[in-house]
Image (tube, rainbow, N blue to C red):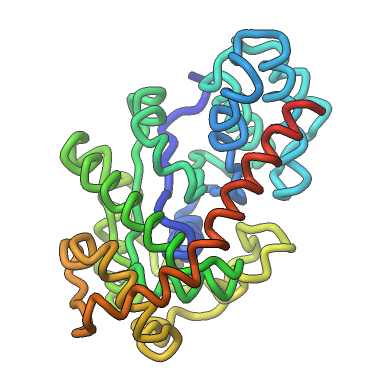
Length: 311
């Protein structure tokens, strides 16, 4: 692989991955570009696109990578990158490594590159297998607060968020058992914002990078680390605050809290989050309201993938 010592930040969407990215990007010589979302838009569509080794599958994967560069404001010269992608081996690993190496080469000050895409969580085993010197960090946040944030950013409903958050925590638990502590670790959002220096010193030690005071002043950075259209991430340009802990108590209804806890209560407790005392029977109303939208969203995604595959 061309990329040396990369690291990856993953987690449920709206768990604080952008905040952690901003903090770690303050390490001298470290650069973390906006989200590439590489694996969902290539390997995630292979069933519809065809094998990456086939002409059609490879062409569609290359097309999607190139289209994502301007959309996500990645530091890439699309013409040069296209030539590099077409010259590499026909594997998702080779395409991803080529993209990473290309972005790193375009940042003169970058001695080490990180990558932050929440949907890459399921691909952590693949990423760590690709890079024997790679590391991964999962950030975890109270799923009920995640539900509030996802609802405000994308109008995501409570049922879909609860199922997705539970799935992500179960993946994290399996990775924590599977990988050694010097290659995979996690941090709670709540700990990161209440005791940032302690957690950042620990993460810097994990990454074998020096801790500097600049990590505590991430909001003063020149590079936002996200695309201009992602206005929901703008709060990471402000100082750290604890005000967003426990917002769910006033932003979610009791039936929504009940539904989330019914679905993911075990995982909440496993991460040290206390459950509100609400009868489980109250979850039925929220479940009935959320189910139609959840089914429509899933069907819409499948139509989009089939449409792109046929274009």
